[in-house]
Image 1 (cartoon, rainbow, N blue to C red):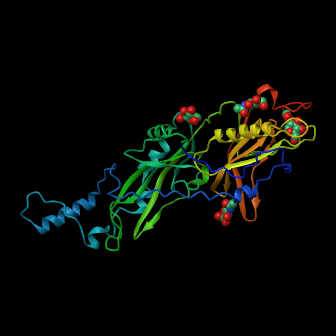
Image 2 (cartoon, protein in one colour; image 1 turned 90 degrees about the vertical axis):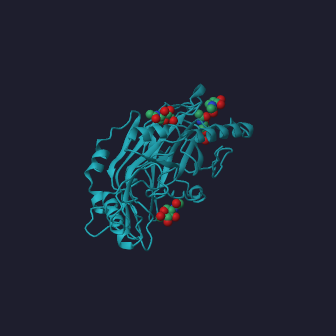
Image 3 (tube, rainbow, N blue to C red; image 1 turned 180 degrees about the vertical axis):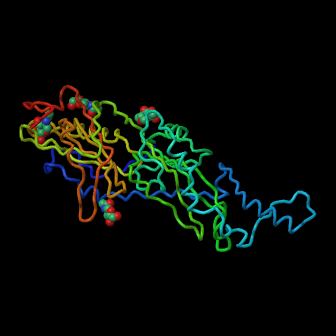
Length: 365
Ligand SMILES: *[C@@H]1O[C@H](CO)[C@@H](O)[C@H](O)[C@H]1NC(C)=O
Ligand SMILES: *[C@@H]1O[C@H](CO)[C@@H](O)[C@H](O)[C@H]1NC(C)=O
Ligand SMILES: *[C@@H]1O[C@H](CO)[C@@H](O)[C@H](O)[C@H]1NC(C)=O
Ligand SMILES: *[C@@H]1O[C@H](CO)[C@@H](O)[C@H](O)[C@H]1NC(C)=O
């Protein structure tokens, strides 16, 4: 059972909340930052699933074995211990620059077809994604198999996007005496329980001693559909904008507050549960006069701080607002730009409880 951090629980009677809805900074500040996952650089010991062969290293190893024992008819490859033997020789083609320029890699990325039901977030980037919501692990693949990568994602509950790429990894862990070993090419499929954004391919590698880890042919795919929570209908995709509802035609505030999740996978069902539970609470604690306000509509999206996902944001309302009111495309807070992605709205239209009395739906005011 996964546990979810539920922040700023505002269940209760109608709260005096300003219209329009600003990002709730107090709720955002209460969140723990989402840690950047460490996807290990694969070395020879860890990468049991990859088979690599470095022709130049093997050839020089055979040469060393022959020099050590010229009468051996089947020279064994020797383990190189000296730095000059371990590190690639000057003039070797085994360089980060050649890896980045490798046309086999770019061709694999640009010619890969997008599996049905998925959409391409970006293609053939020299970096893997960072700051994505809901890291769910990775696999090392034997080939650049996009369909296999998305099929594995489908088997992971909550997985909704993948990043597949070629990584130039050291064949042995670089050390001070083996500072620039021969490379191996590792193909990684990384799983996320949230959307991969187009501009997120910013992890371009790292140095390990004199060995340069680099990434090439990085593609990302996002599942095109989102599950509709039970009891809710009318999913409306809102892209990079959030609902910013005015008062309704009766001059009444329909906004019922915010919930933010920062652990686990992005899941509209979490907002649905919060919405239904808020209604339940309000029914159990009715106002002295009038009828309890119930949550009938919610908007959920990933809130970003720059390119870093902050959390899954949910705003709740007692009336359905159409897509024309999705006008909040982000806010600045000092030098930090907070933006919205993967925004969806859902209504509970049961019995018309989401429609204001006396207003012309869907244009409330
Ligand atoms: C996309 O996600 C939906 C909802 O979780 C799921 O039912 C569907 O199987 C996924 N589609 C594909 C093509 O993987
Ligand atoms: C949908 O709204 C109706 C009317 O308010 C309510 O009775 C029902 O419990 C709601 N369904 C969910 C799943 O919250
Ligand atoms: C937003 O990002 C900036 C810059 O990285 C950081 O200083 C700030 O604390 C972040 N704010 C939140 C609420 O995540
Ligand atoms: C929504 O809540 C407001 C109170 O702010 C109320 O006046 C209005 O009638 C409610 N709408 C519905 C459809 O119940």
